[in-house]
Image (tube, one colour):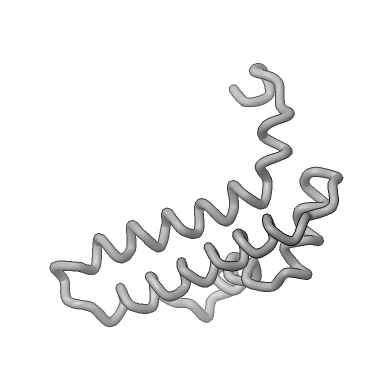
Length: 95
């Protein structure tokens, strides 16, 4: 994994409370509360650690660590944009 690429750096910037709060406001139009910010930051940090460990692990556990990294990063993104998806209509979700 190339954690130094721009895409990875953008995703891992969710480890910053300020950036997560800014993105949440842009996506949902609502202020991010402290509890949700901590959950987003923690999930992003967990993802980074899973990916880092997967990169240096044996072939037998690499897929599992990568899966957990994807799951943790997905959780961060869902928490970031949860209000937006919750408010969408069925037609908007289908697009």
